[in-house]
Length: 145
View 1: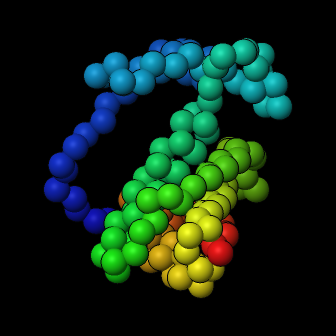
View 2: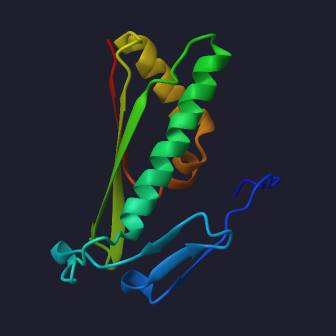
């Protein structure tokens, strides 16, 4: 396991699990949670799920990693859109698991160049990619010019 030197720590608490309330310690995030109807829950309006929060975090982090890699190569990927889809479902071994699809789109960069930048961001930089590697299947697709 890698050892890190923390430069920032985010802390959040949830009361009530998947049908509860989540809030960051610094109050930057405050959301009500609900189990979606597809999972047998009430799917309450104006609520979110842990999967939505994970998808938003991964997309933002991956976008930052992509921009970092691009800037190191004197390229500009600031206009890239990263869409992250997080699926949850039963595992063959029991319990539940996640699967992730990342889609990177940037019409200002040629397909091969964007694919190379995205691969490097995924393999070397993004902490979400490091955390999921070997634990969660992640499918990466790229759409350049």
